[in-house]
Image (cartoon, rainbow, N blue to C red; front, side, top):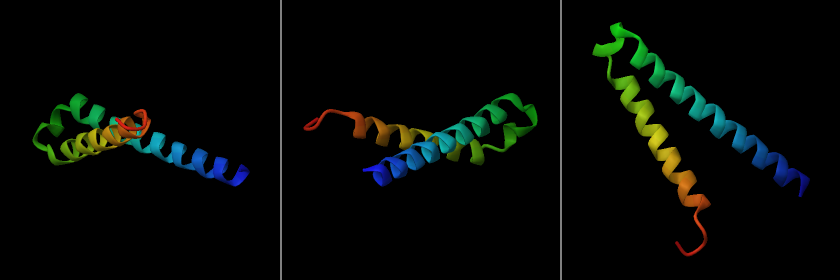
Length: 65
């Protein structure tokens, strides 16, 4: 059980770090007026955040929903 717990912690940390990085990219794009022409990176970051959020919400839903 200890190994499974360690793996879960590792995955949770990875997800947290990934979401934090995506949020950083989005915030930088909103705050940097020179990046207005560069829409691809923020668009991809937003899409990845949305996909990860949807997966997490799906996993947290009670069984059968």
